[in-house]
Structure formats: C-alpha cells, structure tokens
Length: 263
Image: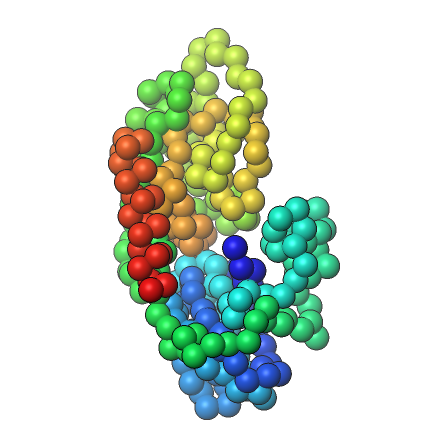
C-alpha cells in the first residue's frame, strides 16, 4: 500500500537531498548513480548519499520502472489511496505528473534492514529475453467459444496506442458478438480482455474502469497481468488457456513469493 514513483518507457534524473535508501523494480532503465558511475540493480535496495544524482534512461526491457523510498513517498491519501489519478487531476502530488523541482520525501527514516535487500520479481523479470511472452487466461462467464479459441490460437502484437487503462493488441480481428446477441454493461477488473468493435483485444490494466459494455472473452490470470503491463509496443504476446482454479493457484503462488521475499 505504500506510494512509489512510476516511470513509463522514459526515466529521469533525481538529486538526493538527504542520505538514505532507495529501491528499484520493474523495467530496466539502466539506472545509475552518476557521481561514481555506480549501476543500480533492479529488484533490490541501495544506499544513497546527499548530493548524488540518480539517472534513469529509456527502458531497454520492459515498460514501467518503480522507484521506492522507505515507508513509501509521503503524500496525503485521497479516497484511501496515495496514487495519482491523472485523468481526474487528483491524488499523489497535486494530481499531476512530476515536474522539475518537485521534492519527494520518504514516509519514515531508513532502518538497518532496508539497505541491500533483495526481493522476488513479482511476475516480471526484465532480464528474460523471449520473442513471445506467454500469458495465462481463463474463459470469461458467458463467452461464446469462437472468440476465446481464436484468442489463444494466435500471437498478438502490443500496439503503441495504450496507457495504464489498457494495453491494446494488434492482430487478426476476433468476433465481437454472437449473432443477435444483446450486450449489457457488466463489471470488469484489471486483466479482463475487452473486444471493441475493431475486434482487436484490449487487456485492462491498473487504471481499468469498474464497468464496461464490450464483450469480454477472457480474463488474464492475476499473476500474469504484470507481464502484459511490461510488454513494449511492437513486442509479441500469446495466450494459453487455464482453468479458474489454476489461475487461483498461480495467484496464491505469487503472494507466497512476495511474502518470502520480504522475510
């Protein structure tokens, strides 16, 4: 539940104003501490000193990189969250993206346990080099089989048109409705795969709406949503069918991995 800084495809530079600890996860933006040309590895925490500058370049693998401070970034919670809603202009730091001169403060001082800590990748490993990333999906309730079967029988390409709401996929169009079918709005969640009129799927991500009226042929296993969120435009992805029980077991395994990484 702690607030972190998210950088998408392109990073930035940050001056350390007080010695402490930072941690980095997610996409590989070739982070470095400039004064000593010290690389900052992913999936671990690092000591930093006042006056040092941390630089994050463009992502070479993955899409989103996360920079964390002890206890999270100190911002006021709104509606029970410290995250930023850019479309609504609220939350986080004045409801906007960061600008030069902004100051980020940690919610607590670092402890002896903070430095040099390592943890699991949480479903995404930017060091893995694969041409097509396989993502597990389960059929959505009430879906007609044709759309689901075609979804899992071919590879897709991540479109450059996408954001935190959803990742658009390009490929052969899928059938959007069965003949004569009347659709009504229904609840959706991150991982739901919607089919707009174009027939090209949209995988809903962290800023997914709570309701939608597009057909939903499948839902990505919760454990695999980070894989979709970290695929760059132009990269391929394909789906494999699993049962709902298998999806729940995968989510349980991911939770255990996170707990073990904190111990």
